[in-house]
Length: 473
Image (cartoon, rainbow, N blue to C red; front, side, top):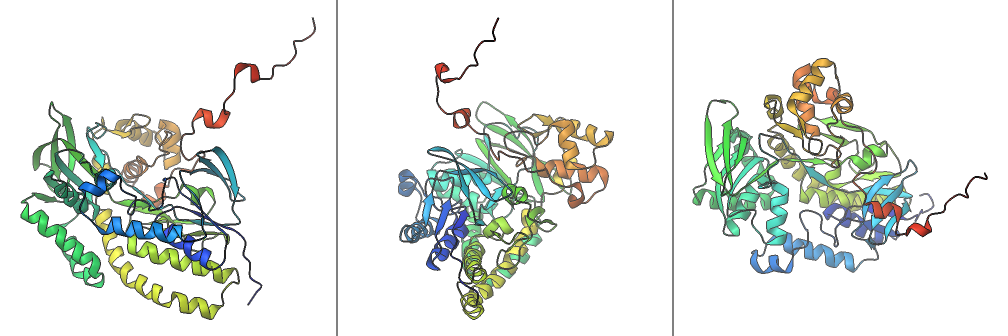
């Protein structure tokens, strides 16, 4: 075995994968720095609840799992930098950070990217109104804030989060007016049969569905919200069946929660030059990794949902396996020890991933919706770009997403295309007969999010500005 290399490790992301990986790396003897934009560890699933939420939300595995994770982190030797965001990355893997003390830089000898996934949004008429919230945002509001998005809610989109959010609304005493699912009912039935490989998820799913059925909530499969109109008391929502557009249903509600699955957060990995591929099943771009999270850069690893959306249980196993792989790659443990440590996690992961892969088509069930958007529908809400402008640019000759971006400003706003990229890709692919992979992706740009001007300039008075001497007469 080669001489051990205990160079410092940097982990981006304090969710289940990143925190698990950081703790395991510290146990192998590495100095580890964990960076996360939240004030405490937990990520989206295990986000720490407010004191009010602990009083009003029934006990659940998110609360207990998050508390356990944070206790393990506190007992470890991991150096944590919370409330800190990564806004840039150099070719040498130096991180540009914005934290409580302002802007800073951190060189990363070895970088583990575990920054999770982002929610996928697909637009419709009226989707920018304040009473419409993302499924993930609604879940955070309820689970971690103990607050309903509205007393009456229509839940729409695709993927398991759809039914989770509906269950959470009922749990807090709200009313679910309808569940609008872009997926096929038969796909859910096939998933149910496969959940025998994951008893924990099967038990949870069964509990959710029994309660939703008991509440008598209408469920529309192969359908989507096509229009939202504001009223004096909330929203009037039009639900359109995807296979029979002439069939429509109207629902009045105080709010709507919409989201079309998850996709890996790739701004950091794309900026780092890691090889990526388009996963047609999940309908998203993901970094190319091996089973341990190794990428095309030997000093950069990707783990958890950042390497492809597979869910909480798989994310934890991925984080653990990645940490053991780094210890092996740095000569800290032998090949025999590595195989011993990863044998059970790899076996568990293979079983759980079979279920997770079955879920991906359900999360990507709304992929055909953008092709049918009305011309006056806003696609890029940051720059107020409508579908008509995108179609006009495509007809003029735009052949990929970055050309479309340059001609229309779609994707140039503060969200860096997080909310509009999938819809723009869908429009382009449908109009040009391209595959989503051929349509491409927006080029990653720095800063990854808007920076406060004071963070860049610091505090100063006018007298602090050096002025050149006046030129001689």
